Image 1 (cartoon, rainbow, N blue to C red):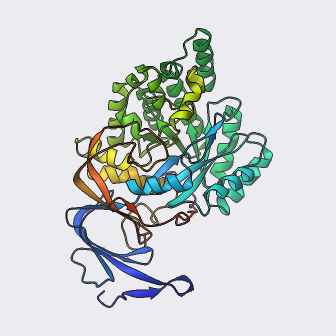
Image 2: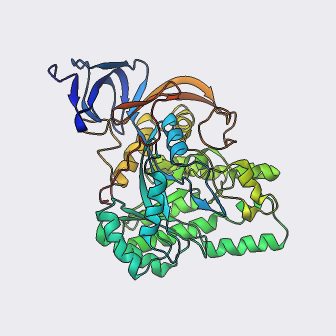
Image 3: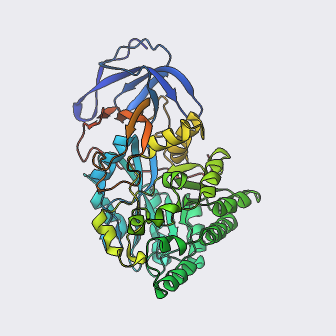
Length: 476
């Protein structure tokens, strides 16, 4: 090992430095030890204790945690929605993600009904290519499954590395598909080595309740919550899990919020069927009482809505029981002036919540520090499991020789306060304004390059790479 070079030649002859991270508290989904990490180019070359290797750059990580770059598999960047666009684009959104320790995001392409999947793919690729600061990949949301779109799935998986396909069981007339289309899509995706993910809420029941509340003049943000009771999510989750079990297609429920939906997954497992589940940081930490603040409650209007304290307890338990494998964000930010589009009618408030920057620090401070989860579980749900489920492991999601050198150096004791005036997301408020946290991202490496150091981003837009993903196995 001492003979490894300080420099070597990369593509087109450029000289790339070697980096040695010393004395880090290295955390993985199973690992927990103090040691060193040696990086050559974009990859990790060696991990161990007291490595006798010279490098051009040495980082002393004494007192810091080192864990694999986090993956947020649920974001919406520059997404068209309700007559506007989410306010973070690929530059601002992935930069904010890097500041918080998230090195890779998976965004959702939305097919327009009546149009092809590739038309949507080209539109989203155009927004992302040359603009992303961090690494990114795509899910494809299928809103119109037919003979033509079925054929496109083959090329999307084989050529573009898109192996996950999302369906909506809500937003009728825009995004929602019926059960017939769901079965057809699952059969096609299963045959090609992909996975179907789902927004699992009962769209017909929600539309009925929205119309009822509006007709009765109930227009405040709290009626967004009351129009989507727990049963709408529990029923749809059970239906999706049952159909996925019947078809044998790997399934994944996004943004699970409540005990009823969790029990649907638990019951499904009793039949030896496996559906993965994701929750989001807001559902672990915030609750529906925030909707009682008149229009201020619009800051937390998202779908599904925030739930009750008992649901938070169930979700934390679900993480520790292995029923929930991923904690994401559903990052879909809007500025306050955009939220004001619904000031007279809750159904016109753009649905979404800014969270991409603070997920890691919130989960550490509120989860690890408060004894709700272990350090290993923290890495598992933020990095390793998303990488495994979505076909990026072991390139992403672990600190091991041959993996991308995506590494977060994290101070477990630094105290700080969340403030919209200092965050890097392109929105003028925070859903966690004034929250005091312990634990902060200090240095972030992406593919062997220091991209964040002590609050400063050291790279420009275009630095991020598109990550083609492997076919999925439906297990971790």
